[in-house]
Length: 297
Image (tube, rainbow, N blue to C red):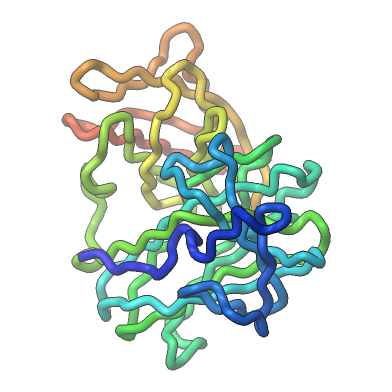
């Protein structure tokens, strides 16, 4: 079954008529953002222009910084099923006006923990938005196994400074039947032009696949659904650690009329990062499997 977050796209309140099409919030703001509690310092809700919206077409997003360039933290309590593997998914983008530099400057963390005991069963993962001019939305996720029927979901920035401010929106929660071994269909049902990307690597590393404004980050040992919004080769492939590039390459795809996604190896459309291999999964399921090792580097 699926659980629901309240106000997952930050549609409420509508700030399109506010100065700058945005509104700042702090711990003492009243009224507060529906469904979300600002725990520390400040955050902002922004209305997105149609050209800047993610593939889900969310109209608004939360920026993880306040009007005084201070880092923020928000929290929402979600209903969870004890001992049932749970995944929270969303998309993020860097601030389009932020100068390029240390990718950690817009990094943020996502933490899940039991509401009644924040230190028990706590899971925290760091995320780093894709660098580049303008909005560039990237799918992100965190998977955990709840120990209580109510779990706190928190997002918070990593450092102070004017370069803070990743945008996030489009939150979804999926409750599965519990931990299961990997299977060819482990991303679940796929829609047209979607692929299940798997990254077989140490979990300290992240595979990033991107083209234009569409990107996807896949932590080592995990899977992520990626929508092929543009079929013209080539898609950039980057391996990262702590938000910094470790190796880079590219990959090309084709989609047949019946929806099958294949890798284009000819004419140098696919050139893997040093030490990385890629193959299509067996059968009709559109899974692309990357494998990479640091051995010999």
